[in-house]
Image (cartoon, rainbow, N blue to C red; front, side, top):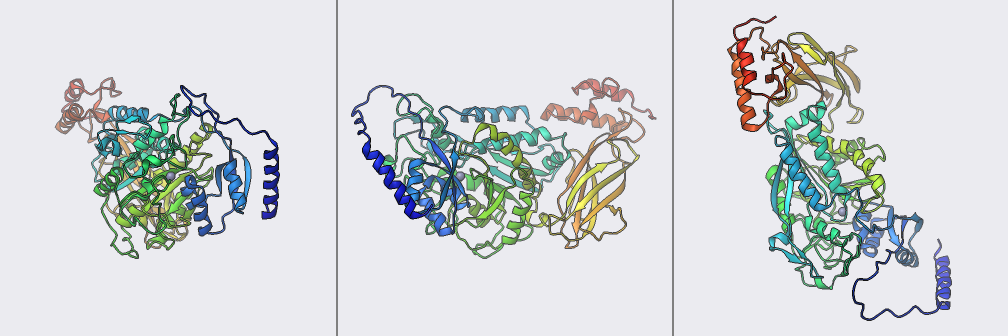
Length: 636
Ligand SMILES: [Zn+2]
């Protein structure tokens, strides 16, 4: 729309308004419950942004869309008043249609915070060998011994919790750590649901999905459902039905800290563009206070806090991540982390229509010293998203003190913000399952390459790993095949592939190049895609379940990550090690297995031998006695 026609339209509106009778004066003193008013209609608006400076200026006008605009969003949700204001200022925008109304109740597809915390505690109890919930600190409110909102509502505060997902019984060593968190911006409520689904996918996939099985044997995955639980309490606080509650969840983004001078002047009940608290994604110690990188206004959506790392949630976050992932980058802005850096972090946000991966840096529009590797990982991550395929972006204007800059800048690891696809901060429920399912493969990939992400990303994929027999008698040959494919990893010729047969929960294989060599089916390694095969021996493998792990190398000497297929080795059920005779070793192994079951509540099913080897789901002394009864016998 041309500016002159905007002016004409505004004049027309003013004429109509002036012809209407004056609205009744508002009641000066309302008492008792107010009838709930419907929220203002909101509209989905397409923006055309020409430059980073224009995005930054727009973000100041639309503070609640600060992050989305930094991420290059072209679609935001605005009220009519906001649309009119932008048009008056001459911005190029088009109204695409009505946005979903702000919910007037809690949307049913999202768990309440107390449900999320209870679910996590129960899930840990149900899966003690795969889930350990770690309390890594207290929220601001809890640290205060409780706190009170501007409106006088009491909040007790929360523990800060992260779930460690790994097979605690695996022989190890664990060779990679991936950390991800939802909810740092409290109103972005799809992100804790994604984090929860990721935990469930991993834990329920163990022993079912060969790739998740080796992943939990070899990696530690850390998932925080929400890194800002006080803020989340304030989102849910709006649900009350008496003043000052509004009957709908509040669009609260920041922390629950209202101790900063001026907090009482922020809007109450809060609005999406004015509330107290600190923007956790501007409070990290790395490059805090960069000019333009965050607001100094207490009520602003990107208020950076009074000092670097002033907030207990952020200090605890940094201390925890530092405790699991070492600092691997020298301190200079232009110093790269080494190619063999280990660890990976993704900070989950919502919402940018179409989804976007934000690549460091954020505090400057200059490129990060590991830029080529960071972008290569981004491009590879995008291939795991399908509907939609996520976009990627550097920050369009300085955003400092943010999580990804801290994790990359301080530790040297690949670290990203992912803004989920969706249609609102509280995305419409019918869209949520697809949004989650679209992201789970990406998160799994991040965990997969977290041992050496800057190297693995250039190594080929091992695809379609397959074994010739899902169940193989011990000693019989097993053929393992796969496709080694470098077309998404630099498109170099494949140079080698190798195979390991590892018992489930067994020791992590050693460095690349130490496995059994696989052959190119066409006789020569010379193409970006090679089908490979190996005839493996199962001699010496005892009864039990295994993974066949395959990885490939390209001509640049880059080894990719493993992919796997499962198989089972069988023999006479009392001959646990498949040596051909039931001997004292088998009896001793069964006794040890029984002791494990008593001590850690977990056991290998191979020791459960009642019912002629079929088991009854419980390992006990009877099983050991059955094996002992065959002691001294040679078995067929
Ligand atoms: Zn956010």
